[in-house]
Image (cartoon, rainbow, N blue to C red):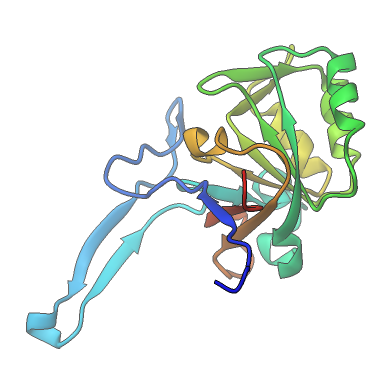
Amino acid sequence: MNGSKVSIIIDLTKPLDPSFIPYSHGSYSDPPFELSEWSTIRNDGFRVSRISLGSQSGTHIDAPAHFMEEGIALDALPPERFMGRFFLVNLTHAPSLAEVLISLTAYREEDILFLRTPENQSTILPREAVRQMLSLPPAVLALSGDIVIEHSDPLEFHRMVAGSAKFLVEDLDEKAAHRIAGHGEMFVFPLRVHGVSGSPCRVLVRLPSGR
């Protein structure tokens, strides 16, 4: 191929299908994912499906408006902020503040902060560690796994992200996320819907060849 380098593309998006279980807590539940036939080639000459789902279904991005009454909606973020070089932070189950601060010293003005917890395991973080992460410039954070702030309720991390006017990509495919090492680029493709608190999205990572 004329000596051109071939990049490695890793898809971090979970598929949306009947196995999808929407978020629920107590008596509340997000809208279910529903896919049904709207028109057929036999009857109409073309096929169209009807899709019904919540704005936070599957792999998705949260805007600050998801948790803040006066938070900005998804369309407030310029499209160029949805892509760029990522800074990968590997988190253990319960790192200390000092351990997190050491990992952040390697930050070099990357565009997206990529946080990865152990596969199938949450990370418990000190509140100050989260504050230090949110003090970095990226407007978009991508989370593989789940983060809980110590001595707080399960959604406090999300509230802190929203309160910092940042956007959170979550519910990534953890197995795919753990294939990523080193540096690369991340691309987040939400729907262009006006005034929403979030959107399902396709999330791709491009790594240099030779990894």
